[in-house]
Amino acid sequence: MLYIVTLSYVPLAVRMKTVGTVREWRGAGITAAQFRALARAGELVRVRHGVYATRAAVDSADGDP
Image (cartoon, rainbow, N blue to C red; front, side, top):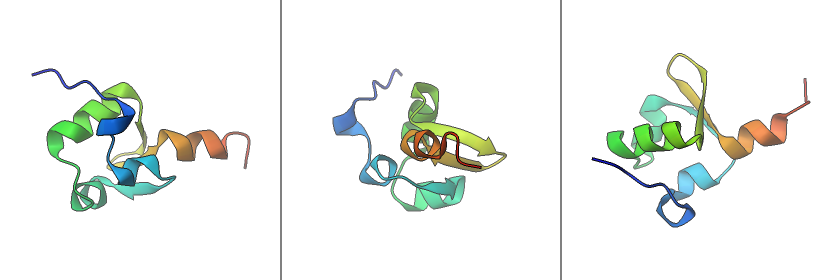
């Protein structure tokens, strides 16, 4: 099954600048299929094992030690 990720389909939790564990993302209402699609699309970026940040959070932290 192919999921196309567009802004209208991106859950509110992902549109906000945030970082969380997979469990926290799932608790925010993102299904496993949505999670995989968002990660493949680059909307969720792996920070370390089990921890993902939104693209907006990563972009806003660019260059900030």
